[in-house]
Length: 113
Image (tube, rainbow, N blue to C red):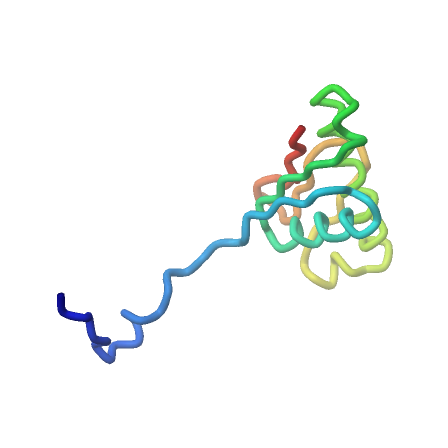
């Protein structure tokens, strides 16, 4: 079989554009919470596995995960970091998803048992 040769056209050699990464975070301790929140800011699809949340009913576990993310976003918002990045603050920590831009889809990490 013949080995394909590059055509010299850079458009053909460039990989297809990739979207934000899909990630899984195990644990929502201090570092895990920081990582989950940063990945959501970047638009990543985040799944979270956390033992303490596994003890709650699924809807409560998801709401608690959202509250933890919102609490960290509120700290960033209070420091002016979200506005500086052109993002909306989380509002209250009511357990719902976060809408980072006006008329943008809401974002939330997905809790997984």
